[in-house]
Amino acid sequence: MLREIATKMCDADFNSVLLNYYRDGRDSMGLHSDDESELGPNPIIASFTFGSRRQLLFQHKHDNKLARIRLMLPSGSLLIMRGKTQQEWKHGIEKTRKPCGGRVNLTYRFIMPEST
Ligand SMILES: O=C(O)CCC(=O)C(=O)O
Image (cartoon, rainbow, N blue to C red; front, side, top):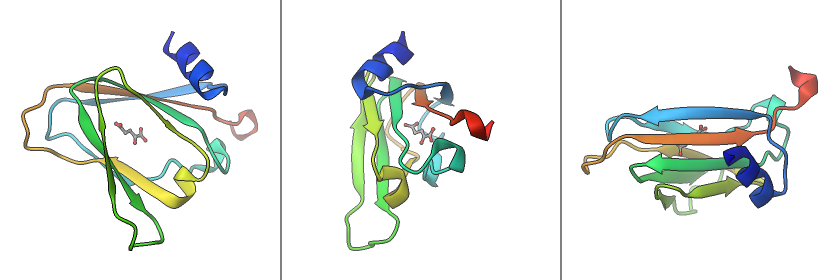
């Protein structure tokens, strides 16, 4: 069902999903880009959040004059990353001291078949 929603919202196909579970505010994900070659040059990534809301931090890779961006991702939200987002930005989930419970994140991707 989630894949169907992602497909409709992005007008794109997805053949892979990655699930991340954050137990509480002590769990985090370091800044990174989803720029693996098997995702192609400008991947579309559909990212669902369920459970506690957390902020996703974006930091530009090359222009340190650009301010960091923090996006609050509430439960049930769908964040779509596309175009040059992975080429130009890193993203990650910071630790937080604010009380928060568990969070599940699912990212739908398309892995190019010739790379498997
Ligand atoms: O948990 C999130 O919202 C980020 C997940 C993420 O960056 C990833 O799976 O590559």
